Every structure is written in structure tokens, then in C-alpha cells.
Image (cartoon, rainbow, N blue to C red):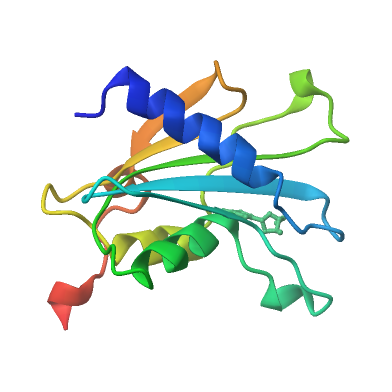
Length: 143
Ligand code: THU
């Protein structure tokens, strides 16, 4: 179980990571922070491309940074995504897209689930889990 301090830290780091977003096309800036089983935290932001389909989401940026550093069990992820052009009262939770859910699924920890925090603001955080967002999923053990 994640304590309040770790949750607050992850959410804060997701907001900071969002500052690194490269989103000139959608202007929808996303940040993510992943806590791995060895206690490290990896952050990422979305990186768009003029060839729109080549865009990489924030969650995958963070996941690939973690996995390529050898950290392959994810305990929790915090995500925040919104356009600065949309007033705070009109923003909604930015849940991870389907591709990102599947990429996170690859790195389930021994506990078998990943806590997902979706933050609208540092104080307004929706908490769920990867298995809730991606039930009956396909993973490495099925091959
Ligand atoms: N985006 C993410 O970074 N994560 C998601 O899970 C959903 C979408 C990004 C991709 C694109 O740069 C922008 O948000 C609008 O789709």
C-alpha cells in the first residue's frame, strides 16, 4: 500500500514532468511519474510529432525510461494532462490511453497490479489500478 507522502511526491513529479511536454499541435500537455519496485521514480512527458501518429504519450516516455534503465516492476504511476488554454473548472481527468495501458501491463510487479493516480490538480486526484483500467489483459506470461 502506498503512503500519502509517496502519492503526493508522485503527483508533484507528474506536474513537474508535464513542463517538459512537447505538444505544439494539440497543446494538451501530459506528465507522468512512475514508482518502480526498487524505489526509483522515472518521469516523462508527451512528445508530439509533425507526423501526428508518431507522437509518444507521457506514460510511455516514463515507462521506457524506467524499463531501459533496468527497472521493470512498476508499483504506481501518477499522470496529469490538460491544456493550459482550458480553464481549470472545465478540465477533466486525463486517463491513460489504451496503448499506454498495455505498455504498463508489461511491467506488473509481483503484487500483480499497479496503482494509477490521475491528477486534475495536486489536490484532486482520482485513484484506480491498472487491472481496473485493463481487465482480462494479455501479458508476457501468455506467450
Ligand atoms: N497523451 C498522453 O500523453 N497520454 C495519454 O494517455 C493520452 C494522450 C497525449 C498524446 C498527445 O500528445 C496529446 O496527449 C493529445 O492526444
